[in-house]
Image (tube, rainbow, N blue to C red; front, side, top):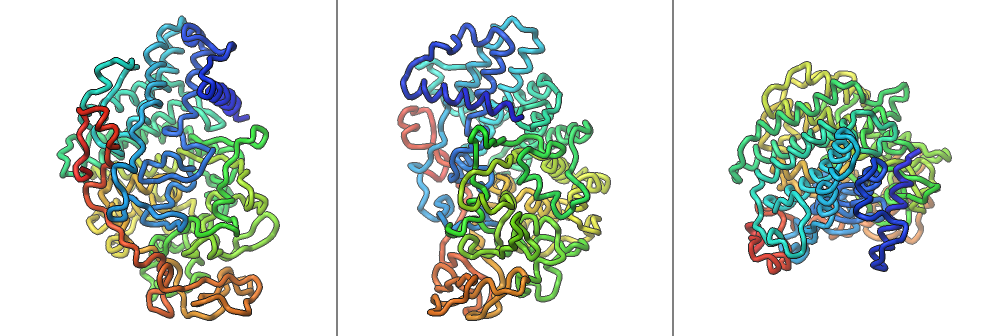
Amino acid sequence: MKSILYILVFIFSISCVEETLDLTPLDSLTSEQVFTTEENLERYINSLYEMPGTFPPSTHIYGSPANGGVGDFQYVTDARSDITFNGQFVEKYYVPGAYTPLDEDLWYWDELRRINYFLDNYNRSEESAEVKNHYAGIARWFRAKFYFNKVKRFGDVPWYGSTLGSSDEDLYKERDPREVVMDSVLADLDFAVEHIRDEKDPTSTTITKWVALGLKSRICLFEGTFRKYHSELGLANADEWLQNAADAADEVMQSGQYSINITDAQNEDYHSLFISDNAVSEEVMLANAHSDNLEVWHGSTNHYSNTGGRYMTSLTKSFVNTYLNIDGSRFTDIPGSDTIFFSREVINRDLRLSQTIRTPGYVRSDGSTPAPFGGVSTTLYHPIKYSHPDPFFDDVARNVNDIPLMRYAEILLNFAEAKAELGTFTNGDWQNTIALLRERAGITDTSMPETLDSYLKENFYENVTSIPIMEIRRERGIELILERFRWDDLMRWKEGGNLSNEYDGIYVPEMNKLFDLNNDGRPDVSFVSEQPANSVSGVYYMIIDGTSIKLSNGTYGKILVKPDMIKEFPEYKYLAPIPPLELQLNPNLVQNEGWQ
């Protein structure tokens, strides 16, 4: 059960000793021994899984999606985007003048050295070519992921294909063009796909051929759409990258190894993917595993449900409006949809909504039916996606539910989007991808709409004129919400301007009145200008102070959070700055435009 955890705990313990004491343990392998047997090759490769730049860690929580998510738990990396709000911090990256090159800390290369050291030495093994290439393929998967993170962050970066010594002149080389680096990334992915074994991992915790294809579809989709929409950079071959994305995704789809998790429990199928102690391997291709026995825990429930917390992650009303009605019609086509109170607006909607946020009917394992809590969720669209139903986990960071890192649903979305961007998307493609996801969500009419959604165009994607692309973007936002994708999607679509959108919450008909959010007959919340002297038990009094929180029409309207906060996303911020110290150490590096 989750055997890789045992290996990683051992490796992590040894590496900590080495780093702390600067000693080599007597029972450790020498460099000559590391590459002799398959067992030793596997041990070295397993050590790469602990690298936070390639696998989101399970030991700490906060970081920035603007920095590629490094340092974040998978389940909070969408905390700062255009469709969520988190009041524990302000995203400096899109506050004018707040983020400078001195704040950048992701120009690091230690992980690459570990990968390249293996690739420089694995052929010393006397094992067969099949064995050696299998592990080399995994190492190159990690290198492709490493460089993907670097390129999407900085653009041009120096490519290092081997281990460098301290006196190597290439340490001070110029940055290689993005096209050169990404061609090398694609070569690594192709090698990985060709040589990593195709046996499916029932624990979803190791890199297989199918995971390599999944990463290839993800990276190629990013690069193809980035090149297409960032025409100012003059990058060529966008369609070739998009075709590679479609082909890689299609190979996974045709393999029959994975499927969308659809059971008789339609009200739980989506949520179960994120709260299961063991990854739902029918759909989850890769996951961060956790174990109570090994004390490998995370705190997703604590983050989203701790009543002692303050203003954690919540969804925005603008985004929640994009969930379709259960019959497949658009919620925003309903007259007055923007003034429907919460307890009614979330009824008869895409079933993923009730499996992503607290809605009427939400029940925990102790039988309680908590309403959205304003002390945690400022907008009152209160996430439950990764929250275990047992209230025990509310106050302790001891979750052991596996966190998906790659799902078959993403593969379907990658395939659909790549084909749509290429102009080759068919009705059959729709039925095999978007319709399938909507079927799992309980939507009865899963056919492709015949008209462009004006709400999505006005509020999110003003330049989109294609119905399939618009609907695929809707689907991607809903299906993958809180899964570490939104920032990258905005960057590749050149939609960074969305980050200046207001943070809006539920519609409030009036102040100083008790409201029942979950239809259980008991009031849950009241919106007041100050805490009343005589409060009602069980009611959260949300202070509408007119500064940090106000209503759009004064005494009624949508909740607006940080309404006076100035946000902007100038074009130069699509690439991050190189830290000044690195420019001093290597005079051949040139700062990205706009950050001088």
